[in-house]
Image (cartoon, rainbow, N blue to C red; front, side):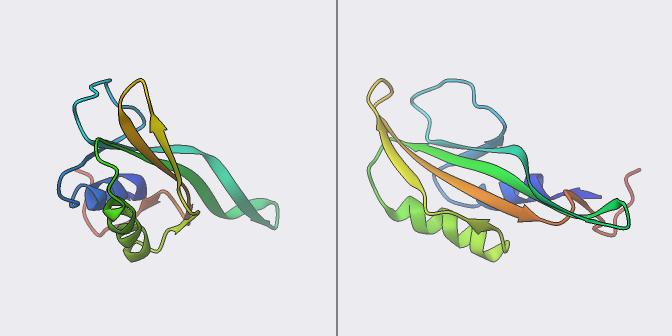
Length: 121
């Protein structure tokens, strides 16, 4: 079994110059980093009294020291490749950390755990 959020983080970590983690980051303002966190269910589809499909909402944020816009294309290319829906990002300058924050709201459709053909043993 494979977790789709972990898979997304692995793909995002292919972007040179930034390290992504899940849920939280230890405060180190000198490091360019990204965080992916599941914030809840975006929607659910019920049939015959049971859940048959779900969509999960994710918060994806990056914290970078430069004001370059290239991060936008790099992150969104991964989201496009993984077929993950996303909003246009919010961009803020964090004065206390001297860092630019880019933040996307993403929607991941389908189960979080998928069969990748490997045994869990």
